[in-house]
Amino acid sequence: MRDEGYANLEAPALDVRSISCGYSPRKLTLHEVSFQVRQGEFVAIIGPNGAGKTTLFRAISGLLPLRSGSLRINNMDAKLLSHKERARQLAIVNQTVEGDMLTVEEYVLMGRLPYHSQLQLFETAEDFAIAEESMRMTGILAKRRRHMDRLSGGEQQLAAIARALTQKTGILLLDEPTSHLDISHQLRILDLVKSLNATRRLTVLLIIHDLNLAAEYSDHLIMLKGGRIFTEGSPASVLTADNIREVYEAEVLVRDNPASGRPCVFPLSGRSAEEA
Amino acid sequence: MRKLLLTLLVLLSLLVVSALAALCIGEISFSPGELLALRDAPEDDIRLNILMQLRVPRILLGLIAGGALSLAGVILQGIFRNPLVEPYTLGISGGASVGVTLAILLGLHTLYGGLALSLAGFLGALATIFVVYGLGIRRGQVRIQTLLLTGVMISFISSSLMLLMMSLSKTEDLPGIVFWIMGSLAETDGALITLLCITSFLVLLLSFLYAPQLNAMRLGSERAMQLGVDTDRVIKLLFVFSSLLTGICVSIVGVIGFVGLIVPQLMRALLGTDNRILLPASFFGGGIFLIISDIVARTIISPNELPIGVITGIIGGSVFILVMAKGKEIRN
Image (cartoon, rainbow over all chains, first blue to last red; front, side):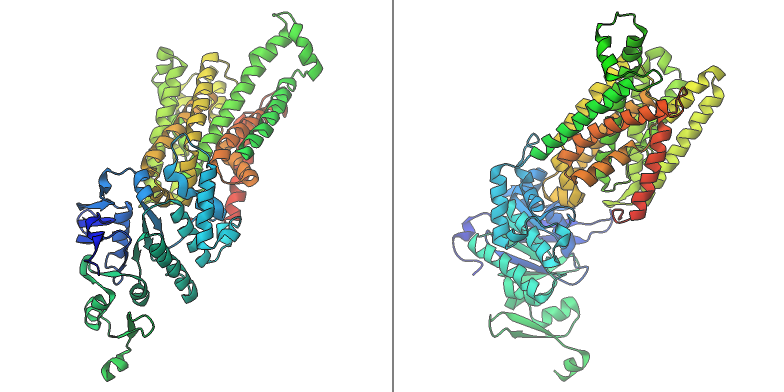
């Protein structure tokens, strides 16, 4: 599926070319990582703690400078993009949402900032219309006057997605957006992202801990281990018991989800593993 | 936009009222009617001279010094995301006064005039701000205790240096120096007042243009960067702005503490956290606050005059403790 069709003619939305980066001068956290995310694709990055997921997220979002390699966003060298230009190509949803003192609407309107010149201090009617549309799509329009710290964790993430949509980018980068949420909110958030991916052809790069959610929602999985890509491919090819044993050092059973046909990971306790 | 205009309208009316009060109240008091009558007074009328030579410059100085210090306070609070930081608590006023003191000890003011002191104040403030920032931020996280303690220590060092200067100077200079340490609006040099005036309004205008970026930084500097704000550049620029405001202010009116804490605190409680409103509102609010504080300083032990820094110090110190005790807003 991935290698077919005219999509090949388009430049990838994200083209990561052997990037290395790290926090201390001598030690690298990420070693020569390369992958592509095609336009309109839904890609998830998985891996155990310390595998480099967050570092990769910081590198792509421009918070961490690359030691070597290059990153192309919509066929433009990220190094040459200003912060503003980057924010018009790539919107980011973080694990936690800041902005306690703001109303939902004020927060969502911040997504228009990349489009404002230095001399534009106030939002236009168009900005308000775009923000309203984003809040409607994410289902938080009714709470637009509510302060952010009065929202539940799930609603805060919806507001964050609305803010990201207000940025009108082609790419959405999400860093563990569901890790603090219960299962109903996890599904609600990811269903929303999936439908935006399907209806708006929004390219999605999702960093996520939960293997089953990753398998259920993404077209393509990238599995990291020790700052390198261990393997990548379709969920069925990546999420095998052998791969998980090697990367996570955990015994699991992998079966297909009868409803979706996607792989589903069952953890095995020490005793069940012996019996299996 | 409407809220901004409304806020400005209210503050400007209050400013006019407090300026009129400051004109009228003093060792020699005038009724508003007498004030009007003085329009036709001959040029050498002593009462007219008191107004024009003493009170008008004081009011002007109060407005712009108060405005400059509050504005510097709001800007710094925006950068550090903490309501307790301002030129005085971060030691930037102290750093500026070290600069000015050194310039005086080196005799630069006799060579180049008051402008040299303002420049020295600016450089002292700028150096301090980068030291404090370097020590107070690790990996993008503000360490507020380190920040405030560094500020207190720099203030200690600066007051010790000023004591040193006092013990080196002639006895007849002492009252002047003491007044400068405690802050005073008694400067009447038109050129210096004009310098402060131009700088303050220019910085007000320029920093206003950065209000949206400062607003985004309410989410934290990394989130602001994700929204397209070049935070490194904005922070450095705003540091230069606050140093200009503080440095020139200190070189002219001395150290007047806590104005940048009290006024923005009040404005934030009344108007919210939108910097597009907060920046100009704090500027004019600071002006009003200092003009009123100066009325109190001039009249409370009349015919003697209290240093204005004593008034702002007592009010500001109490506000600081109150804010800290409330505690909710001070998170690392």
